[in-house]
Length: 269
Image 1 (cartoon, one colour):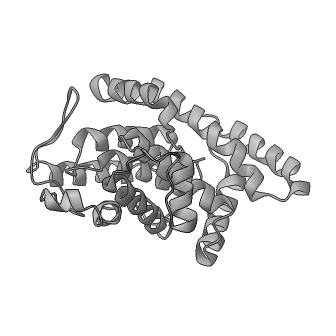
Image 2: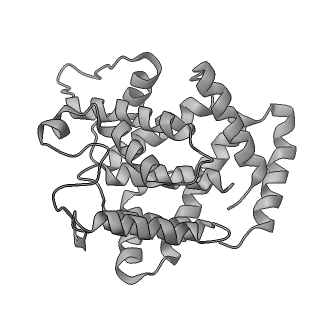
Image 3: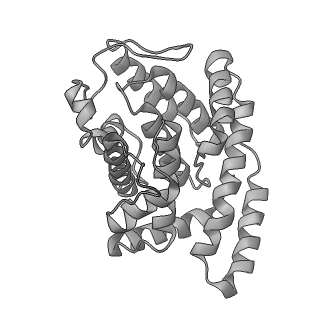
C-alpha cells in the first residue's frame, strides 16, 4: 500500500511535532501506539493508558493498590520511546548495521536486568539463543548473515512491502541480538515503510497470534502471502485514524480521495 500523499505529510508532521515536542498529534499517537503494542507483544504488563502517561507526563499510576509494576517494563517503555525518536532522525537514510545497532542501544541501554545479565547492548549477541521452534543464527554467524541480508535488500531496485516483509522474516530468523529483536525488527519495518512511501505497518498485540503464525510460516516455508495480507490489514488500522490527525477538516475528503487513488495505482506488492 504505497501513497506519497500520506507518507510525505506524515514525515513532515513527525519532524515538526518532534522538534516542538508536541505530544498531542500524530507523533504522540504513533509513539504510544508502537511502544505499547510492541512491548506488550513481548510480555509488558503496562496498559495503553499507563504507556501514554509515561510518555506525556513522565508519571505512572496504578488502577488499584495491589498493582505491582515491573521495573524492566518501565525501563523498556522509555527505551522504546528513545528508539522511536532516534529512528525519526534517520527515516530517509539507507538501512545499515550501524542504524540497526543504535536502535537496539536506544531500546536497551537503560535496562538494568539486561546489563546485569551481561547482554551485549547495541552490539550483536555473544551467546546463542532460540525462539520457539525457530533455529536462530549462532553468534559467530550473525555478522556475515546480517551483511548478506542488507546487501541483498539494497540490491533491489524498487523496495516493495513484499521486500520489507521478507527482510523482516529473515531478520527475526537471524535474531542478531541477545534480546529485543522483535522490537528492533518492528521498528525497522516502520522505518523502511516510510522511507519507501509505503503506509507503515504497526503490529498490534491483539493480533499477536496471527502475526506469529504468518511470520513462522514465512520463515519455515518461505510462504510470504499470509504475512503480506496481514501487513495490509495492519496498514489499514494505522491509516484510517492517522489521516484525521494529519489533514485539516476541510481538506480531509480530498486528501482521502488522493490517498485511495494512489493506493489503487500502486496495488501490486
